Length: 416
Image 1 (cartoon, one colour):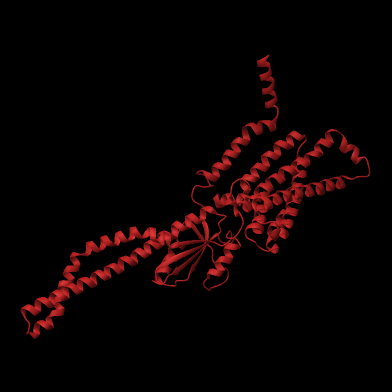
Image 2 (cartoon, one colour):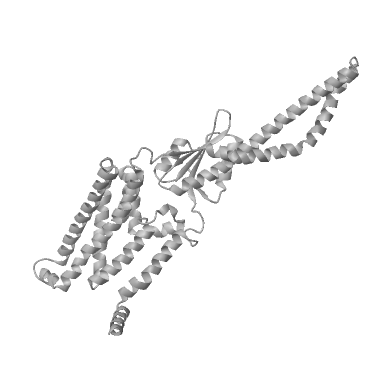
């Protein structure tokens, strides 16, 4: 009898396509998605390029060399100012970082001793980019400052040797030829010959000092790189405000598809036939359910953010206008998505299986599960075909970047 039960269960599995997919296809699909994001595939075969904007406030040959070297770095993608030949300022770079045009602004400056340093105007929502750019800029500053220190050391060494040689020559000539005017005339030339010989014997010492200088300057140059959080500074618990939207959008989709499944239940128990036998039309039925699911989704997300306001410090009151617009449109789109999935399925079981596959896939690619800043450019482009990516970009503009409501029109238009 046990063997019979096993055979019955196996035949049921083989004849249920959705159960087969959930059992064998979905695990492989999700493994592939996360492998592409974190493994050696197209998702993270190399460190994703960081969008940076360069500002040279030192305006020297050394700072210009640093800027040019950063432009050629394969790990950076330089964002230029549109339609302008003027040099960027730190204020303009800060504005570009706030609007999400660039991830980090690199401002090269010089201190009172003309020693180069750098300020990184960072968007702390991307926790990887700051570490990458800090290492790159620190290396460039270390090499530049080491070359300068080596040059100054070599110049000082030459000056000391020259003075020592002249002093020795003066003492020798004063003792041997105290009254010979010709010795006084030959003294500079003799000192020059001795100096050249002495410096030639000390060239290896100067080179060794230069190498030691370059090695010891790396740590000092990393200290010369200052990270400035131009967005997250002053925010109450910014990490929560950044990720709350990702969770809200994912569960909003699950709630909407669950509500759309009521249509299938009504058809199975003939409630739908009795409703349509009255004066109600199918359009009225669908619109009524769409408005209901939209209102329910709006209430669901609002309660979640109200909880975040009181418990985790999410600034909902300060961004109420943008939150209402994004949540209303997102809830309406999610409700339509849930009803659309219900029309593709014949039973509630099919809808549950299909919704799990689609929603989890969109959440993984769109940023609800994994931050999009760890993805490659190709994976980010794939994520833009998902519902989640556009919704999260809109919430990001509202709660993280503090942008005006009129900046939300691309996300609102796509969701609508």
